[in-house]
Length: 194
Length: 275
Image 1 (tube, helix red, strand yellow):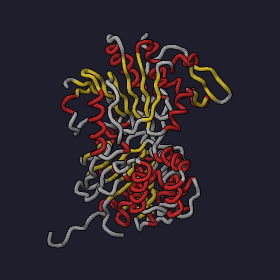
Image 2 (cartoon, rainbow over the protein chains, first blue to last red; image 1 turned 90 degrees about the vertical axis):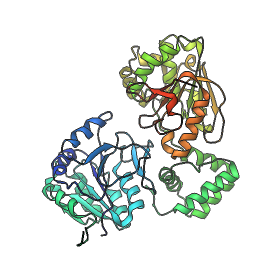
Image 3 (cartoon, one colour; image 1 turned 180 degrees about the vertical axis):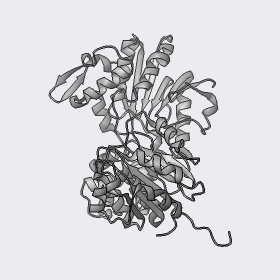
Image 4 (tube, rainbow over the protein chains, first blue to last red; image 1 turned 90 degrees about the horizontal axis):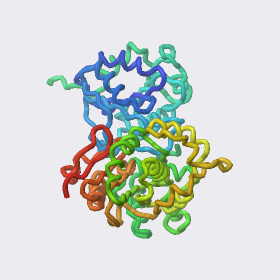
């Protein structure tokens, strides 16, 4: 696995708690963007980014369409849109049909990110009660990226990570307590003389 | 989702070139990530086996090309989508326009017409429908035929009714349609003031002066240059003090027209404040 240039985290039911626990321990000097795709009800966008921004000093913002993707920023996908990534490293939003009964769909963003970041992508799938994200992880692996899931034992709802382990090739299975440490080590490594 | 490697980025450009050359449809300003996803979706849906065959069919079979346009463009919409938006239309925008002798409204990218019928319902409830005209346009003639029928799946009515109530509607939503097997047929009165027509935002010009233009969740599929071009088209088509409404994640910010527009507080509605 090459140095990570983007981390995409997908989750559904039971994933918010994980994010709230992991965020405070993420280093402020991470060298890549973090993109969060979670299923939720419409109209709760600002609530979610407000809540998450209380847990980190990194910039947490809801994605604006055609916005340039910056390292060290945490992006939240808006409710009711799919998120795609363009080759020029900007975001596109898409209001097409739901995928896996979901919009945003985790599969859609994982797949789009895989095409752009290829082997410099890490995708992490958290707790959830459907299998959105699993096909995406298969694509990520095909492009040489790293696939990570929450340890189903630690998940409030284990179906999503368990399905991923069953159907995709998973590089790492992490307990909640291990996630921040992992995230802090996947970016560009500083050279010795820096 | 079909095989993501079935069509390469280069092949996407080849198709865009073919379609422009042979049919005059210009997709060069479309966001590539969305466009490629739609192409792969169509390729998978129609069980295409090779790019060469897919390309040949699009280029040589006019019936298939119609399907291509229909499937490449996104036609997902609902009635009273984003109820708060309609609340603002009902309480602020339309009452203001109601002081005019005549209200011309352009729904650009109207798809299958759900927004047009929502708009007509609000206008009727405000007593303005008789002096309004709704021009509903789309690039895709097939969806316009559906829009003109005013029939939507009955299974959607529960959701639409909830949206309608959340948007400030106080009537019985079911009083606007009659159930016809699995379809809800909306009252003909609502469409008396609608004009359906094809219009391509990329290549067609301004065709009238409007007091209100709605174009929601269309610009997200365009790149920045094309977005600016289309916003300019809207600016050319909007009366002074007219309103422009965009989708919840779209904006006039950063565009050359933004200095002539003032946003209405929380919704994605802008008022033109100078020529």
